[in-house]
Image (cartoon, rainbow, N blue to C red):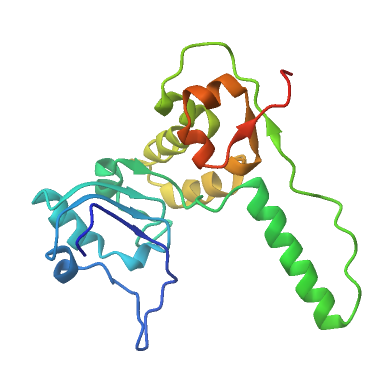
Amino acid sequence: MACDILTLHVPLNKKGEFSTFHWLNDEKLAQGRFKLIINTARGGVIDESAMMRAFAEEIIEDFILDVWEGEPDFDADVARKAFLATPHIAGYSEQSKIDATKIVCDKMADFFGIKPAIPKYQNVTKNMDLAHISYDLIKLLNRLHPIKDFDAALRDLIDRHDKKILFRKLRNEWPYRYEYPYIKIRKPLLQEFPDLVKLGISALNSPL
């Protein structure tokens, strides 16, 4: 547990030898200090009460949650204190939905012993010829993937009595994002921010 950033990507298993329910608990949190904890797995993997105690004691500096205990009835106090709070949409991208649909169709075709049809929809790139304005890296990343918009939308639900219903609505109706390897932007921006290349973003062949 000697790490600055801890990010969780496991299924939620409540029983058995490899149970992940409340895997991150008081005992594990006491083993180190964390600049950031990220959970994009399942809400119950983190004991949120233990996390909040560690946060109050400054064992944790910040945390980002995309998934929640008791989801969709997320804890309002936990959401208020999160660095980023999003409505379980880490896997909500154009590419993931297309790929998941292909997998389902291929499995069904295999089960029924038929030849799968040629898919009508393919993963395509998105050309983003951004305005010629001054960006810093944070502003540019939020333009390419508006995670702060997701965060603001979830925080708008915190004090709503019907937040469970609205959480599902937000999750199901928010437009899908494009994954970074399927985004193309102007070459000068890539040269100015080479970290974008590490994320898989590539250059436009020519201006739109």
